[in-house]
Image (cartoon, rainbow, N blue to C red):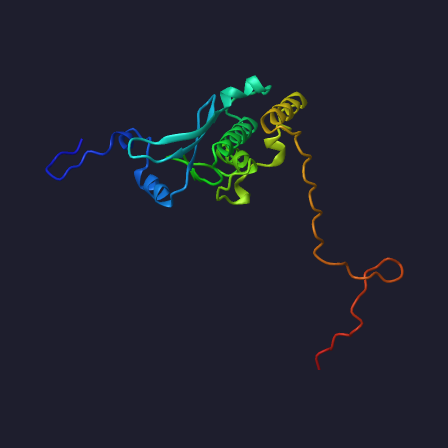
Length: 203
């Protein structure tokens, strides 16, 4: 451990690797409620948190451990569970009068289509405005548990209806890919048309 008159002991949570205070300060300056998403091997927690001098205030919260009571008993840390947890947290946040927020990742390193962004997708679909790029969210198939089994997909739909109060909407139809260009018209006999201009022979 370093010593000396100029040595400064870091904050305890910084030493433990729990808080990035520089990132936290940037989030607090924005003045928006923080959408805190934390994951473990068996659980996902989504909280709406406001700063206070005496300590952070949790305005709304949901955990994946609550989902079995709503009919979805799959692994608590998978993509569909994270989405439902985010959706449940958004419902409670709206009841608390919240409409906007900003994602707080802490010291986590998220990846595109991961559990963190699945939870954020649930928050956004729940009507809370949180800045995020569309390309970071998982596919609809993974969110709806269609990659797991028919039973899991049905349980997801039933749990969604309990949380939202309406049936799971049908998936959006994929737009057909645009063709790059029309092929050259064919001559009689099926062969493609050729250029009629004769190449000049060098003299």
